[in-house]
Length: 450
Length: 112
Figure (cartoon, each protein chain N blue to C red):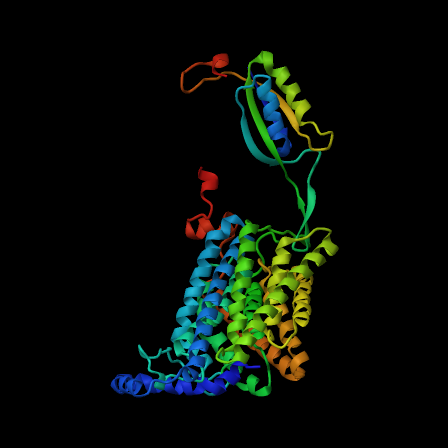
């Protein structure tokens, strides 16, 4: 199994070094490069793995990018029609914010080259290789910096998307985006470096293949803190009863779920971080198959369980169940057999069906089920890795470390934002819907104006 | 002239329209509405939480006809929309003061 840290040890460190060197000496190196290529062009045996892994990052990266569309459609479908424009605005804004912040500080903060402390500041914008990089200057043991950066930034965007769904229909746009800046620029990269940046958790033996904890639980913890500080939507909990607000468009919610499912092949498959050998590319195939199986079993588990518990199937739970299956398998999509992937995903689906009503009992209003799907299933998936590694201590340490850090920091940030700029729209705005009151633009204007 | 307002079950709309055109009704207004009567509401489950649906979807018909035809229209709607189950709807008949066809300027019975 190739973990992110193994890949780092293999190639990332040299790559980082090269990157720094190439910035300084790019111009000087160019003429000699051309000469070197003429002299002895490297054979495919030497550059093949680099090309294959770079391709894996590019294909994986645009698949994970597409998950931004999945989150947008899922959330647009599960909010009421009066808040759809705002939800879509938040989704494209948070993705774009994440993309900029990850360039500005995130990437180098998360992958510092070598681990340099728990909260070490390493605020350096990302620099790409020079145009037309020669084989001699490439880190042939890994992949191109640009492809690596592109791939990794999609993960931080996913983390931010998780938060937007939970806090929908009542949070103001700008304080939300300020939180996204802090989450994607500082919080996620710092905690991510503990594992994928060669930090103390990876040294401890913690294992999280594609980010059940590093990505999904982090988003879930930030969302949980936000939902607690923000409070539930008006009228959601009244006289000890739960008043559901059914989603406006279950076709969009279903489309969004399928898009996320598709994107997840890149999320988990790309996290193999290598495609240059028979073993690696075969593993990528194995990961695709396991990922698909876990999603399917998560959906079926929710399908059966809602039928048994409520006498009717609840589509929104089935959609959440598929996503919970995906989150569950994300911590270890390679080692399990298809049957074990089925079990892992199905337990994720069960967790969602049981924990959605549980959050309601605590009056924590999570509009799209982001906390059960990404946090609770993420914890389960991360724990389940210990069945393969045997290192329960490391898994639990990792879960607790990410939980405490992200939840506490997020709680503080949300409270500061609440005090400084206010995070919640006015009562009147919330009742009229954020689309007309905050944006003056309805998602479905034809319905009333003909 | 009479204005007949009828609330019926949505799935009965097409059947009622056919029955009314076959007895000579030449126009009607149709609105999707929600409301409650003796059927009251029912409960649904959404994401594990049971909730009351207090307003039931219905279709509202508004039909303006000459006074002589009103009883037949009412009887036709009543016969066609009836399922013998709770929630079949209600029919109200009101006196209609005047009518005017916008295109031609015809008034009252000529305008219907």
